[in-house]
Structure formats: structure tokens, C-alpha cells
Image 1 (spheres, helix red, strand yellow):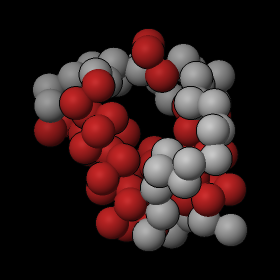
Image 2 (cartoon, rainbow, N blue to C red):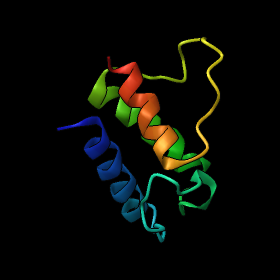
Image 3 (cartoon, one colour):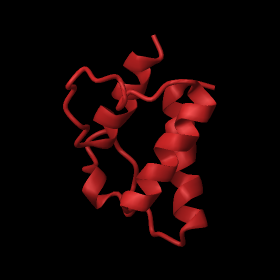
Image 4 (cartoon, rainbow, N blue to C red):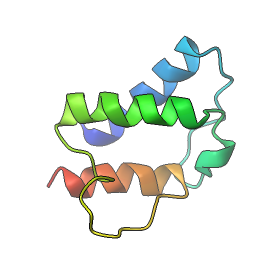
Length: 81
């Protein structure tokens, strides 16, 4: 499964588990408007680390935090390389 597919799948799964209405997923979707809250994102990062073996936010590289869904996916794609 590709990184993009894994992230999109997790967005949908978490929205369902937390009874959230998910906005249409597109690369330019601001994460703050996705329908998920900070708890959902914390769970997502933990689950993606388990699934992909990387956490791009714990590298200490001072990388900017992703603003859009596309930024979020690219962070994982780059960390998985």
C-alpha cells in the first residue's frame, strides 16, 4: 500500500471511529478544516508510525508542521524514503 493510500485510509478510519464528518480529501485541504481534531491527529501519527515505521515529526529537523493534507502526506512520503 502506498503512503498516500495509507494516510487517506487512516483519515477515513479515524473520522468514522470518532464520529467526525470528514471534509472532501484533497491535497490543498487545510488540516484544520479536515474535520479531525488534535486527538485524532495524535492517534493518526501513532498509527502511521506503527504502519509505516516512521514519524516525520520526531526527527528533530525543525521541519515546518504540515498545513494541508498534501503537506502531511509528503512529510510521510519523504520520511519513508
